[in-house]
Length: 277
Image (cartoon, rainbow, N blue to C red; front, side):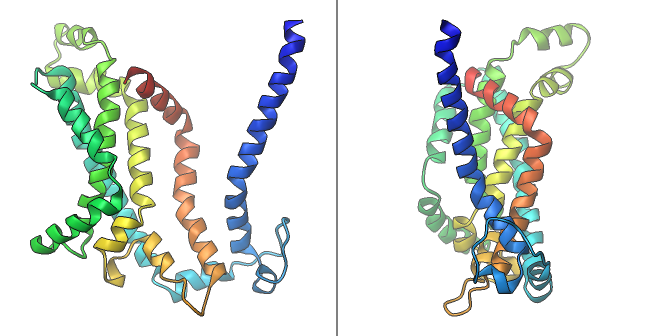
């Protein structure tokens, strides 16, 4: 009887999951097929089935626009942001969980509180500061602004992850002859791999898709990143929807690849960090 009663509930759950999946995936599907449809059918007909295909929009995007330059700028900014975030997040999170630091909970809480501010509220005063330091309209200034989002999130997440890791594991490694640094590198970091990958993915996602900071911090076309460069293609009289869809697809490809390759670690790290924090 219990199994019979639970069957409608399971079917309802599956149906709701399918509806949510279709609702979430349809804009991405529409973006991809729109970037491949021929110009004559892109705006004149509405069809859920793909075809006929063409790569004209991708060729125009790569040959007639500054998209390759914007792509490289985004790669540089995102990669450097991830590397700096990982280094400082690991150092700070490990220090506040293993060292006796007065007010360490206040430090971590203050960083999380700073993360809750809207990017626009932070970007305007930061632009004034960077302008005085000579960092306005530079990739270095943009990377520094991205760290205001990625670093607090990384510290908070890894703090909960390291806090739930028994210190006896490091003590056992040090008894076997490892130094404190050796125990950290050989024991803590390998066990923290899911959490580290989760922080890296979140940092890359926030930096790669950022529009607010890039719009305010960057003024020249040579230093624009992908979201701002793609938005500049939307004119008042010339809407190049095919190229915009192609550019959006290329922006999403690295995110698809990251999630496809690291989904297992991402889910493990997200669950572990949420429970232990």
